[in-house]
Length: 463
Image (cartoon, rainbow, N blue to C red; front, side):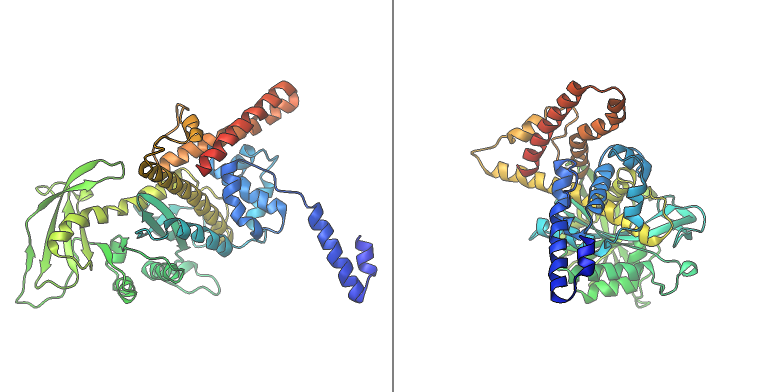
C-alpha cells in the first residue's frame, strides 16, 4: 500500500492516500476492555488519543490507580493490569502526545453537568510533599503542610468544589520557588496562583456560594481584593494576631460565646462555640472566633475567621460554624489523593510529566466523585418515588457482599468501586500461573464469573 501511495501523484494521489487512511482506520483494533466503570468513564476521553495503545494506557492507569494496589508505582500498576512491564505506561506519561488541558477540560465539563444548579463551595488550599535531591523541577526547601515544617519538597495550590457532601477536584497549579525558576517562568505567590485558579473557574461558568481558605490567603489582601472584584462571598481563616486599622479612640470588643451544633460529614453533631470580635465600629468584614472549649481555648481546635458574608451577626452565628467547617473537606479530600490514589507516587523529574500524573490522579478522583454523586441522586429520586422505594436489583445483589457499603460518601464509593474491579485484577494476577498450569475449566469459569460481575456492575452504574 505504501508503494502505491509513493508512486501516485496529483489528485489521484490524494484519493489514494484518503483510501489508505480509511483502510487503516477500518483495520485499527478496538481498545482492550477493562471493567464497565472504567470503560464507561474513559470513553468520554477516547477522541483525545489517536493511538489505541495510548488510550489503553490511559484506561490501565485509571484502573490501577482505582484498584487496591498499595503503592501506586508504575511497576505495581503494570502488574495489576496484566502488562509484562511498566515501559508502556512510562512512555504514555512522558512521550505520548496528549494534552493535560484537554483532559482537564472534559473532566470539568462532566463536573459542571453533574452539579448544574446546585450550591457549590470553593475550597482553596496548598499541599506540599517531601522530594529528595535537586533533580526534580520546582523542588526546594519550603514549608510543607504534610510534615508541618520547612523541608525539601514540591508544593501545589489546589482548588476543590464541595457540593452536598461530595468533594470534586477542580484545578491545581505548582508553586515555583524563586530559586528554581526556569527559562520563561515568572514568580507568582501562592495567593496570586489561587486568584488565577478562581478566575479560570469563573471563566468556565462555575458559580460558587462561598470561597473558603486558610490563613495564608486570609492574610493576603491581594487574594481578598481579587475575590471582592469578582463579587464572591468568602470565609477565610486569619492568624490570632491579625491586625486591623482603627482610630485610637475605639476599642476591640469580644462578645459573649454562643453554643452551636457543628454538623459533621457522617451526620453526627458536635458541640462548638462561636463569638464575634468587633474592631471599633462594625464594617462589611466581620471577625469571629470558633472553639471546642471556651474556657481553655485549645490551640488545635480554636480558630479565627474573617468574612464578608452579608448577614446579621445573629444569623452568622448559626451558619458560619458549619460553613467554615467545610474546610475540613479539603484536608480529608487531599488525604485520599495521597493515601488512596497515589498523588506522590511518581518517580519523575520533569514537571511536564509530573503534571500529567497529577491530571490522571484528579481524573480518577473525579470518577469516584461523579459515581458517588450519581448514587446519591439515585437514592434521592427513589426516596421521592413512593412506588419504588427499594434499592434497584443490581445494587441489591452487590450489597450482599460483606464489604459493600450502603453509604454514598466518597470513601464508601471508592470502597465499592474497588470491590467491582477486584475480580478482573485478581484474574490478571493469576495469569502467569495459568500460563504454567493450564486449566481451561478454571479459565472458563472465571470468565463466566467476570461476566456476571460486569453485568451487575453495569446495572449498578446506570440504575
